[in-house]
Amino acid sequence: MTTFYSEFQKALVSVDCIIFGFDNNKLKILIGRRNMDPGRGEWSLYGGFVRSDESLDEAADRTLLGLTGLRNVFMRQVGAFGAVKRDPGERVISVAYYALINVKDYDDRLRQAHGVEWVEVDKIPEMYSDHQEMIARARKLMRQKMKTEPVGFELLPSLFTLTQLQRLYEAVNGEEIDKRNFRKRIKEMDFIEKTELIDKTTSKRGAALYRFNKRAFTEDAKFKL
Amino acid sequence: MTTFYSEFQKALVSVDCIIFGFDNNKLKILIGRRNMDPGRGEWSLYGGFVRSDESLDEAADRTLLGLTGLRNVFMRQVGAFGAVKRDPGERVISVAYYALINVKDYDDRLRQAHGVEWVEVDKIPEMYSDHQEMIARARKLMRQKMKTEPVGFELLPSLFTLTQLQRLYEAVNGEEIDKRNFRKRIKEMDFIEKTELIDKTTSKRGAALYRFNKRAFTEDAKFKL
DNA sequence: TCAAAAGTGTTAGATTTACACCCATGA
DNA sequence: TCATGGGTGTAAATCTAACACTTTTGA
Image (tube, rainbow over all chains, first blue to last red; front, side):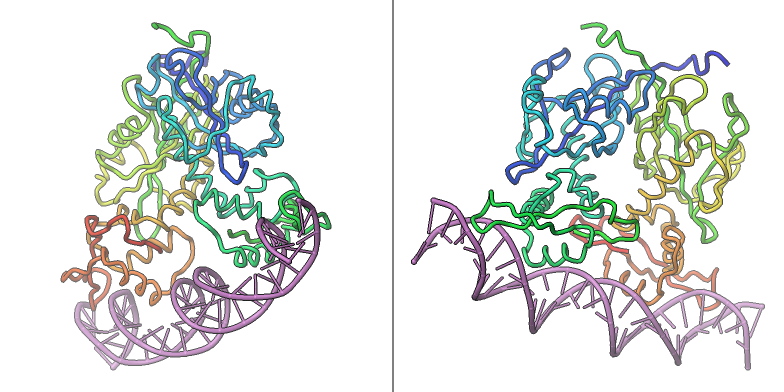
C-alpha cells in the first residue's frame, strides 16, 4: 500500500484567480505583471501552487487570502487548464477559480504591495499563456451564476442603492436595463430589504439603501434578474 | 531556464469519464468495478492518468477511445477534483469529463471486455471516492447544456422519431413533457428536419424519422427545449 | 375490430417589454 | 430655480401551459 501508480509521471498543479470587483459602475478584475520566469513582465492572473496538504479549493482560498487579506470570499471553480505547453517551463496543470469581492473591503496598499491593478473586463490586455481564456470562461460562468443566484451582492457594500445594483447587472451583462422593470422585479424578492437609511452621496434627493437578507433567502425563494 | 518551480511538490493527474447513453427510454452511464488497489471492487468511473505529452482534453479523448473505440465524441469538462485524501494512495488530482454517445455505436463485446455496465442515472450505487459528486455535477452541467444547445442528438441515432427525442428530454429532466407543446417547439427549429422515412419498430402506424442538420444550425438559430 | 402509438390547434393565463412623468434636494 | 438622479404604473405583446380527439395499421 505504499507507492501506487509509481510508473506515471506527475505534474505541478497551480490555481489561478479571476478576482472580480465592481467599482465606478464598471466590472473589473485584478491582474498584475508576472515577476518570475518564464513570462516575466507579461500581464497575468494572480495564482500559486497547490500544496500537498491542501485541496484545490483550499489552495484557491489561501491564494486569495494572501493577495487580499480576505476570508470566506465567494469563489467558484472555472475549470482545469492543461495544454501541454501552456507553461513554457515544465508541465503545469492550472485550475482557475473566480472570486467576487467588494472592492471597499480590499486595502489599496495591499493591492499596490502586490503590484496588481483593477482593469475593466472590457479592456483586458493580452495575457500570459492561457489566462485570456480563463478570464473568458470565468466571465461566462459568473454571468450565468448572477442570473440565477443572488451572488451579485458579494460585489457590493452590505448597504446599496437600487441604482447601484442595476448598474452592476448592466455591467455584467453588457446591456442597459429598464429602470422600472428592474425595480418591479426587485420588489418581488422579499429578501432584498429596504432600510430606513438614505444614501446622499450620489444624488441631492438621496436614494434608499437596501440590504440583501441572506437568511430570508431560502431554497424555494426564486431569484431572477 | 531548465528547471522552474523545482521547490514545489507535484501530483498525479487523472481524468475520469462520465459517459452518458440513452437506451430503453432511460438515461444511463457507464461504470465498472475497480480492478486495482486502492478501492478494488468498488463501483467506479472509467478513467486514466494524463501523460506528459498530452493535454487534459486529449487524455479524456484517449481514455474514451480506449473504452469505446469511438472518436470525435462530444465531451465537456466537468471540473477538477482535488481533495487531499480523495485517493487513498498518493495525491491525485482528477479532472472529470462527461461524454454523450449513441449506445448503438458502442460494440457490446468491447463493453463486456472492459467490465463496464450501463446503469440508470437514477440507480447509481455507492461509488468509489468522490465519483458520486462527479456524476452529480456532470448531470447538472449536461442538463443545462441540453436545454440551450442541440447536443441531445449525440445520444440518438442519426435518424430518430419525435417520440424518441421527447423521451430523451424527459429522461434528462426527470419530468414528463406535453407532446403537443414539445412538437410545436420542434417545428419551429428548421434544423430538425423531417425525412420521408418511417420507423415501424415502435408502432403499427409508424412514425416519421427526423434528422438533425448540423450545418443548418447556425449561430443565430435559437434552440430551446 | 381493437389496442397502441402517431399526429394535430386552441385558448387562458402568466410573463415580458416598452414607455414618460413627477419628486426631492443642494448648489 | 434648475439640474440631477430617485422613484413610480399601465397596457400591448409574447410566451407558456393546459388540454382531447382522430388516424393508421398489425395482430
